[in-house]
Image 1 (spheres, one colour):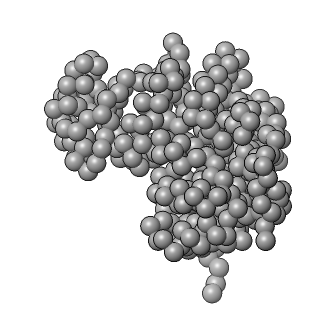
Image 2 (cartoon, one colour):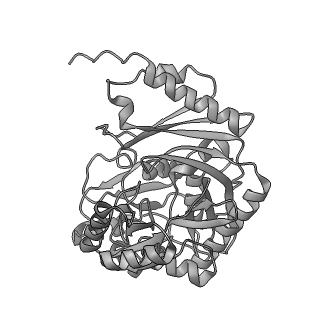
Image 3 (cartoon, one colour):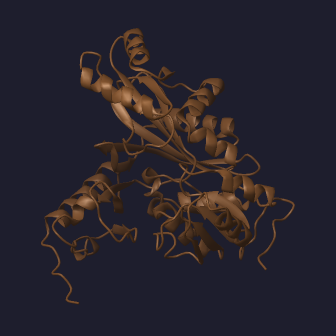
Length: 393
């Protein structure tokens, strides 16, 4: 039988960490958990042979609404955490009712998975964010566009990531208004004022049971078609102080026990919080090589009640590998593996699709700019290289 939770809230090594979700974040979390002697169970939501399930001790491949599967997951787990927030949180409620620690708490996950609740929390905590309003019709959207003096971004209140379930509305373009109205018809939506910014930044922050907070510094992100493309550490002292301060404020307001990523817009006149992910984040992948304790190490530590590690990052950059890299066939990985200091992470997904995150490259360098140049050059060389010959059956 696995070790029980102590009065201090510590879940000792040897226990089973139950992870809701079976994707690449769960896969990297499992690697960190195994290093500290924990076992891992993943509840996939229905898929089999998932990236996380391939490396976990237990894979429960059933829909989240399967009551028997939820019971099996709770029975095999000693503590529960989340790999992805857009899930039914009832499994967390049931785990807690059975006496298991659930970190972050289901209530926190429900706040972050609903943009209305999230914006309300930010307002109550005094955290700066873009003007917003719930909307349910084209007329309401146009009213807010008029009030904000221009365009609006309409988003589904629940679900939607990597730019999905969002519509930029130009009042002069009826097609964008109709598309936004269709989003409203599909479910609850919000409208936000369009924010002019010159860079997007994020902070991955960890908060322990006793309220101790550690962050990984600030990362500057670039997106292509709404999907994260590159991330690079930031050394601007003023931006680092302001952004980490906001991330700490959000973590405290949420009473977070776990890891979260706070995404922000740098407008030049200040920072606005855009989204909160209550789990590790793609923009924090570079912490695996750049920090003594990565974002996944910190998740294991917070979930199991252990002291937090040193999250400070050396200069580093990450470049995402999407399914497009496979368009012409299997890449020749020797092209990047032969390069000094280039780290390759593949997520074990069997089917590359355009826009699907399949892996990433990381470089730790002498400066952020140098690391970013090297990692993007490595990716360009990989894409340009001849494809591997198909393997004969």
